[in-house]
Each structure stands twice: as C-alpha cells, then as structure tokens.
Length: 296
Image (cartoon, rainbow, N blue to C red; front, top):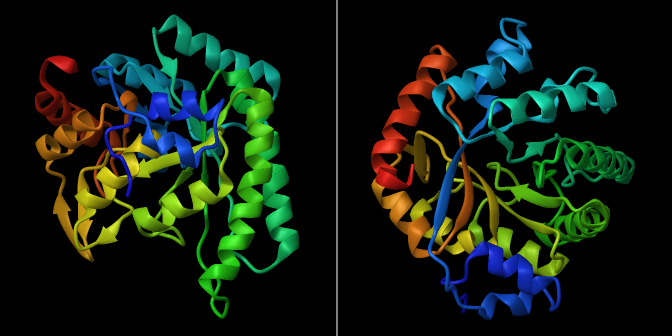
C-alpha cells in the first residue's frame, strides 16, 4: 500500500541512497511550498504561427507575475535538433533578469511503438536534450510514454518503456536533470500504471510529470493523489475528466490534496482550447491565486 504522506523532495532525496521503491515509506515533515510556473505550451498557437516569439512569451509571463516558466523544447530554433548554446544562454539570461526560474522543459518521444529503431532514435533525442536542459538550468525535463501500438500486449510495451526510460534516466543523472514522464492520455493512462513503471525503472532521476487532465478515470482526483508522491512537475489545467466527461477543475479541492501530500515545488499552469491564450492564462492565473490564497 502506498504511503501518500511522503513529499516528492524527500522521495528523491532518499532515493539517492536507497532504492526508489523503498523510499515510498518515508514520512513528510516539511510544510508544503507551492510556486507558480507557466507551461509555455499554452502559447502553442501563437508560437507556431510566428505571432509571438519565445522571448516575448517569457516577457508576458513575467508581466503576469509568474515565478517561473516551463519552455517546451518545440519552441527553440531548429527543434528537434538542439539549439545553439548562445540561444540557450540568451533565454537563461532573460529569465534571470526578469526574476523567473526555469522550472522545466520537455520534448516529444514515443516509447510505445514496436519499431525498435524509432525508440532508439527517441532515446538519443532525449539524451541530447538532457544536455540542453542542464545548460538551461532546467531541473526537470518532461518526456512521454507514447501511444500504445495496436496488436502488442501491455506487458511487452511495458518492457520497451522501462528499458528506454532507464537508459534515459542514466543520462539525466549524469547531468543532474530529473526526467519526468507525463501521463499524457496515452499508454500510461492511470496512476497505478504510471507508478508501476516508475517503480520498475527504479531510478532517483525518473519521476512523474503530473498532468491533471491526463487521467480519464472514474475519479481523477484519486489518481492525482496517488501520483503526487512521485511528482516533480505538473500541468495544472482548467478541466479534469471523469472518464470522458470534461469538468471544470475544482481548484480548492486540488490544492487541498496537493497540500495534504506535502508537495514542495512548482505548479506549472497550462490552458488549452479556443480563445486568446494570453487572456485565457491571465484569467486562469487569477482563479488559481484565489484558490491558493496567501501561498500564491
């Protein structure tokens, strides 16, 4: 049975000296500390159409009063190739002068495909971007499990995923970056499955990127609570899903659950759907701040 009182800082700290699975029995002693970051996928439509640049989006996040940004790798020049070191340094300098931390970054990959060559290419892609994350001073890099390929049993895909994540986590550890696998409405569709894979990899450099909209179950809040001890990064969204029924996120309930688990760290926000992303994020941030109260 999972001990849900453990906070994720203790989880990772203890895991440096003991096996990852055994660290779940630790108990939380520190008060929760919640800081707000902006996941820049929010601005995907503006960035991909060239209506805003990455530096302009970072400026906007500073104007909104965020404490950090999470710039997805897709928006760096030349992606999927690593950007020039000079550009990485430019972004890092800009964020620092604006008083913003870089809470994480992320890349695309799919470890749930049968083609071993494609999986190997994605492993190498992640390894390259771990170095980018380290230069960017991003402590976390988000990766995916991928969409399950038809005709292959879950157990076989689990083996691919665990093997690939373990190799990537070894690289992440060499550069001091925590790899975080997102529950992205894909192969890892429940907290039980996500946790099972993390425990099988058994690395202090692999954790969960907790997407609150990624659990399409009968009670997503239960899945969220179960996964919090493993989380180092988030996507806090406007809506959650009870099975396939989209429902506005109960922010008060969500933050109560997060605090009860003793989580300490950033909560990146992300808005999706139609409308101006700038206005949507501004409005969502205001709601989040009200729900968080004095902690925001």
